[in-house]
Length: 234
Image (cartoon, rainbow, N blue to C red; front, side, top):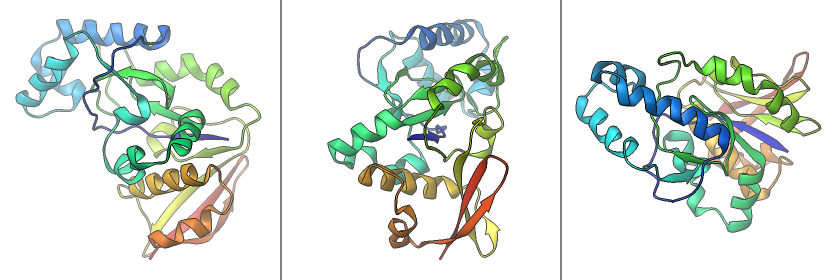
């Protein structure tokens, strides 16, 4: 099984020493070169910060020798709060780390175990000659290969689905409240689903398992190569 998941604007400042993969290091070098030469205004725009104090805090980490963290532990925010990775049993952590791909704004699709440095790049922003779309175009065949023959559950936000879509049949989920599709708070429910997948190390029975969170299965919608499970928030 492979689970496709979104990143988060929020991140912790990692503390591990380690080695980045060659691909991640190459992209980070481009990012670091931009940060090192750009104006404060350009950096603030790319990062999505409105306060220079926030920019300064981020730069204090980026301009040091980079510390690293596993992707699944680097991101914070609504979905990752709902997942609560640190509280999972060890076997659930291992299963989730092995089976999850996180779709980063900067690094493309990365394994949950991939070691990443702290970075800040607002969704949809580029810098110098860099664009998120370009990263995914270059990585497309690699992602295709990693998903080949797998049961794929797509829990990503719409932005990332526009950057890459699985070629073969896959599953996704949509959440509704009072007849309207949940957008921002959909992150929370996707985090809950990811946690339940990890706790049970699989997809079977997910409709029943999320009921305790007030999430009720409503049915399915089929398209050419995607089955979408719909849920109502009670």
